[in-house]
Length: 194
Image 1 (cartoon, one colour):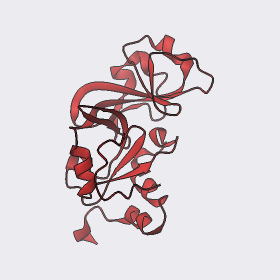
Image 2 (tube, rainbow, N blue to C red):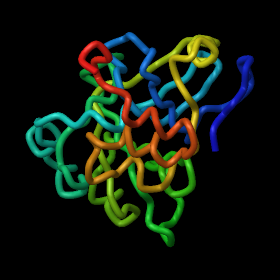
Image 3 (spheres, rainbow, N blue to C red):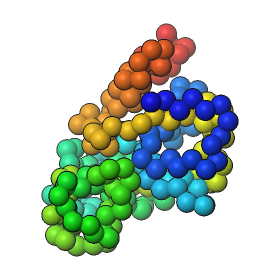
Image 4 (cartoon, one colour):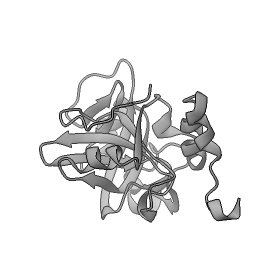
């Protein structure tokens, strides 16, 4: 489903929603990105970019978490804010007990407390990814950017955060919207070269 709101929904939570950059977004930090909202508090919205895998191996930075990291087992650029910070996003097993090491985002998807012992968290998870940095918006900022046409808000599918082809996620999300929105998936990276 597509959010077709013409005015900002100041009370709407973006947790669990996909924020998909439109071709009109000129910020290179977010060019063709797919962000999932993982937090929405009074001080703003927090999300991680799902489709910017790096070549840096999780094992090199967080060795103890490497065995749990899904394919590809690399760090992902979560966003430009605090690039030295790490955020874990995990897929909880259906029968896993509640744990304060896992904060639900959407269904079985949630953020992980990476300061915990991975052996304690491992029995809860079917998979995970590690993101460096995050995307953040102050109160009302994201709503204003959506109103200006920089972002579209779509429902997330369970597989989106763990796509085996993260570099294709932006076009895949647009394609599955159907109708005229699916044409955005083919929008050239450089319209001048069209």
